[in-house]
Length: 248
Length: 248
Image (cartoon, rainbow over all chains, first blue to last red):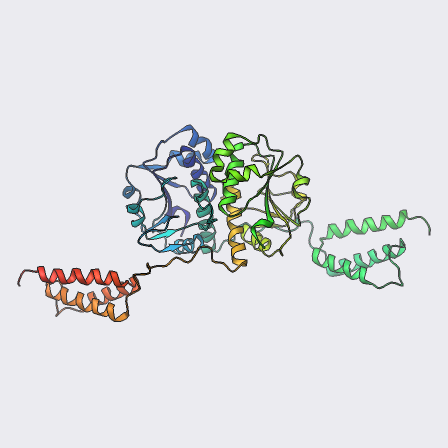
């Protein structure tokens, strides 16, 4: 499965801005194939403005008069739906639905279909879909903006396609820059001993009192897992407090 | 963990429409606490229009002059980030990050922080965050619209909070209406036998040829798992083809 097998189909879109917002959302998630069925207005300045860096998708969009033209060559058609229907259709949440899409073999064409902002997809359109998908929303206010719905579903589909391709969602980010490897256990031990000396030397720690303080410090550094540079900074500071201390 | 523990903090938002779009996205996902730090313009007609049914969130939003005011009473602060930093901060994908948030005990206050559309969060603001979260986006065009980013993260957080509360993402949808239970195995067997009789009777099926056709039909009905009404419709149709057949 790859991103080029998926088309986003917007049917009877009323607000030109939503076409631009949907194009941007798609491209942000790596999808480029936009189909517009009978849009109220297209192209428009508003759509181009909302598309921002995804203007190219508006130029290459396929505009159709009828829904059936947009899906004729598709093998799997997913319709977005919020309303309960008289004859219920198989209804999935986005994660389950996108797992199924991502399992499609190469060359199979998949359509993700979004209806009009006010009325959604018609029964005719919904009946042409193999599955219906609903975004789990607040029951008290469940109607997402059209481009927001495109964003959620393309986000889920991106995650599932990357997982199916054995790729991580984010490129692995080093927790430490290459020149600052995590400190060794011995380096952290030395830091803790230095800290204890400095705490004793400054009079902060009473050698006669229980050693709870050092246990807490040990636990904190264990959680922090400092890198070599951080240990170096802390030890430098400890040394300087020792040097600048008044004779006691 | 519950939805009221989470606040959405928008810092230095430039486009008034994005404040409205973010309010709508939040409420769609069940979050109601919006903080605005030094917005370029607020309130505005544009924000109210984009908020649609979430106008109430704009009226109850907390407006602050400085970022620190918006997060002073928070226990866990998550900053959204797209840029690589000179000193890398722990960076998570939305799913991992929202799992961590959803594991917070009750009463802990959580802030999800979004920066300016052009510049994101400043280093000062990012350094006040415990974690940074990045939405896995198309590396060639990774900059999401602000309200789209709010939509993705609140969607993930909704899923994780519902999971933590042992609630399903969508209310369980019956695959069949209550008056149409799935057909029994015997009813489907009777249908298959009826179909075979009708296919033989019409001359479509040659009794001398291999039985591949009926195996394929059996496999299809096994996949379909028809309900009682569907079996009834199909058997009625088979009976009527038998009745209306010309004598052979």
